[in-house]
Image (cartoon, rainbow, N blue to C red; front, side, top):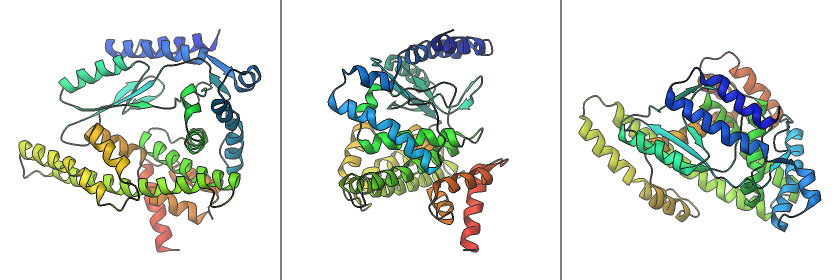
Length: 354
């Protein structure tokens, strides 16, 4: 049995448990996933045969080195990103939806993976069709592209051709992010897992660039400038989330008033970004003007970016050693009903007993 066939079989075996619309989604996703995995070719073979542009070849050669560096930091070595999806030219689309007057996400249940707050598509038209349906049902909806793809260890995920056009910092951070998932995965908590992997990816890429090119190199300094601005914009978004959540939970105002305040708060995002002290605010301002924000987009931001301060406190307690940090996060969350609550408690104990 080929790997591609195995993917299709997995989808079909689980499909008996699904309603019609979800069954169609699983079968379609299974087909395109099989197509993706069937296109995999070993990185060494691709490099040996040539045919890539100089920049693409340079990026592809970096990936084994990035993985080896991650292993040295304490991240699990996996067989992900040992291959390239050679010639595969699709774009992956991510769709999320949320109640318009609360941060209650739409979720979907699937065999094996359980309940998730977003859907992935291999065709924009399929994502837009689902978007239209959800908008008609009254949801806020956010559709975006996704640069990388992960089956969370079920299959050996390949490097996508589009990843070879990224900067070295973006490429390495993505690889570290996926290695973090392979190293520690807390069942039943997508938000925790994504926030954890984001934190590890950001910490690891700083170490990687410093060790590869020396302290203060331009690639690292550029990354640090971007991360300082992103941290300030994150604070803006977290405050916006809190302001909106306060409105949504207010039982003394009408639905109409909540809607009006929601509109005004989202309209304030541009001015908030401009006054947040960003070194270069215009990329954020232009993005706000171009695409806008709604509950679905802000809810997904929260999924990927929660409680970095507590993660940082645990990392500092472990002397900056990422391997020890990951081990402690595993200990903190083992058996916890709410991994974020367990993390917050552990971090607060550090403050009380430094």
